[in-house]
Image: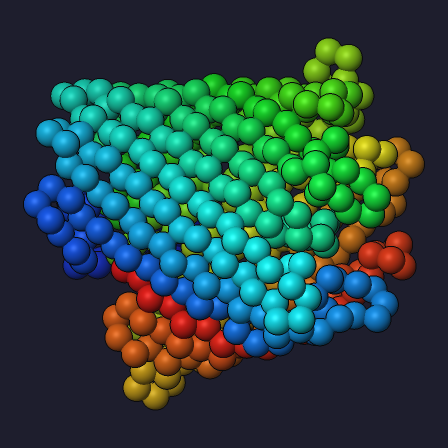
Amino acid sequence: MAIALLIILMLLQAVPVSAQQPSDAVATAPIRFGPLGLGPRMALTNVGVDTNVFNEAENPKQDFTLTASPGIELWLRAGRGLLTAEGRLDIAYFAKYSTETSVGRSVSAGYEFPLNRFRPLAHFSSTKARERPGYEIDARVRRQEDNGLAGMDVRLGGKSYMQLGYRQSHTTYDEDAIFEGWRLDQSLNRASKAAEAVFRYKLTPMTTWVVRASAEQERFAFATARNSNTGRISTGFDLGRFALIRGTAQVGYRTLTAADGGTTPTFRGVTADVDVSYTAPTQTRLSLMTSREVEYSYELAHPYYLQTGFSLTVTQRIIGHWDLQALGGRNRLDYRAPSLSDRVDTVDRIGGGVGYQFADHVRVSLDAQAQHRQSVLPERRLRTFRVGGSVTYGY
């Protein structure tokens, strides 16, 4: 599984590193006003040509497009507490097919108040966007996702602590969000509740062992036959951003069963969520993402599919501030229903690009990516090719 969690993350970061992760977010912010720290961001991406704007199997449409994403991150010390907030706009522009032009937003806020052995915390995030929700739905549809967490960290010892929390989330599609004749609000609008416990143990200054367990309820607004209950347990590592290998790596086990009156087929199996990167002394950076999780389908005939995927990106510094990048990946959509047990869709991606690092926080690149989806259903087969540039600025 993910090469045994990358050989237990290179034997728990056996190579020493000198940098330590900063503990004071306000003190390390690029812009500071007393107890307030700010971190501006800006990205101009997808500046180029999309050869299949609507992801059509036949007669694809081509257009010039770009996406501008201004944003800011905020940290505010209030006594012993710390307030964090982040906001971002995503402005997508299409020159010919103006129906695809849209503005989305994403905001989040959190608060922590450390005590001697306890740290109460709360977090909220909200995203409203008009985009493709994933690899199954090809239409850019408007939806809103709201998530909230309330909980407390309890320090158990010098290197370990437990987090107890309660989560709620809502997923809501607009009434005019339609794909293949299906109203997505009727099949996908839902709310979930979860109680979870997370145990963390600091193995090294850069590596934390994590064990997570949760009990969840998923309730649909209209398609109530999909209501389900879930139990999860997972384990893995959180890795500091100055570590030799940085990111997160988790593997677990999930059970999903129908709630009272529901008809959702039972699922029991392994899940995974890995997002790590490694920078070699030769100026080569490897980034790996793997995932395995249940996703709900828009079609009521098969309530969900098991999505398993990976993505590998290799970035090589060549001369000065120039670098070359290559990427590839695959996602496998395994539909779970008695009548569709033999349906598996696959999405393959390959691409690359060249980039230039103007400064520590400014990068310009020219990228190209091709995508190929295969399916037993002819209308679900497609090819796309996108080429364009990007400019990113952020701390």
